[in-house]
Image 1 (tube, rainbow, N blue to C red):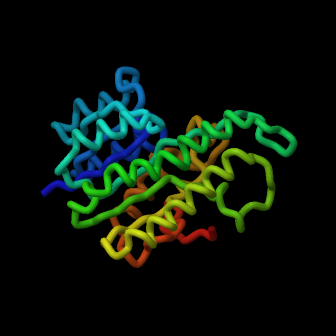
Image 2: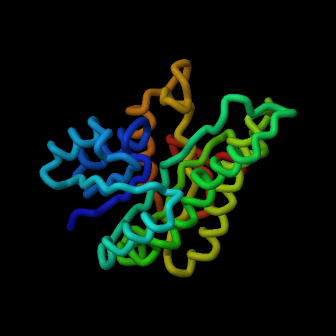
Length: 232
């Protein structure tokens, strides 16, 4: 039977290419984004997928939309829940700049939303054999890897998201759930910028291989798109 992955923020960048590669490999894909009517590339993938990819409207900061999605998916197995939706935040994030409301907005998207999604869709994950919950993390959120400072908002939001995944790995281990954070590499996306060395296609291909090869032995880790473990 075809396995299913649910991807948030699937309308562009890494999320879009990850949706594409999973469809190409024969998976069922539930691709979520805030504005499906504006997601032309995602719609094109869906049109050519012979029903393999379905698009769902989802603002990950909306409890109403998360709960509505969960209700509509009741009883459907989700092998991999991939929390991809994320934002960088304001351009100025260096020392001395305090943009509190924008900081909270980034936390709602990058940190709190993955936890809400895990809570809302845990029953779906438990219906699957694979039982994977993954969140797009970042080396920028690694305390040990931080040698340049700056990006206070983005770094702290990702570091907190990493801790959520570590907690989930402990709390859900007895239920056979593998919970990890995934660093996609430095990718040429709206967030990563044009100078990044990796294309979204290259990152997505690596993420696919790592995600589909995960076992419970890897739970609680921060892994990159090549499967290498990074320090928290």
